[in-house]
Structures are given as C-alpha cells and as structure tokens.
Length: 112
Image (tube, one colour):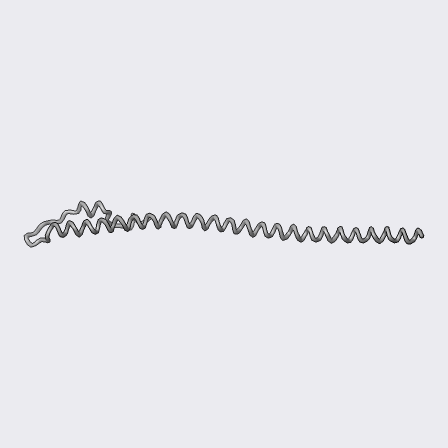
C-alpha cells in the first residue's frame, strides 16, 4: 500500500554511490550513517507491514462483529414476533377454554 509512496528502499540506500571531491566527507562516517538509515528504514517497513496486517485483521473482525450484531437483532425480532404471536395464541386458548367452561357450566345448571 505504501510502497508506491516510498521513494527509496533499503537496498537503494545501500547501493547509493556518491561522487568524491577533494573536500568530500569521510567515507566511513557516511557509510556508518547510511547503515543506520538502512536499519531504521527496514524497521519502519516492518512496522508498516505489521500495522497493515493488524488493520486488515481488525477490519475483518469488525465485519464479523457487524454480521453477528445483525444476526442478533434479527433473532431478537423473530423472538419478539414469536412471543407476541405466542401470547395471542395463549389468550385465544384461554378465551376458548373460558367459553367452554361457561357452556359446560350452563349445561350442568340447566340440567339440575
């Protein structure tokens, strides 16, 4: 992802050659400094790659959690509908039983 935005890779730094002037820098100091830069650069690339992987893992986890949330909401709606219809069915059954009890009770009272 970031490779397109990064201008130099560690190998580019390692292979860089400078022109030498009569008043040039000390080559050992420049080499040591470039070695330090290369080491840091490699660390930065490793950190970026690890963070990219972690980001991808977290995004996948977010997708899974969102799906679980949707499923839970759907299950709650289904359970709510089922309990509502179950309550209605229970009320209907109780009402019918009550009517049957009245009818049976009335038949007993009429028979006496």
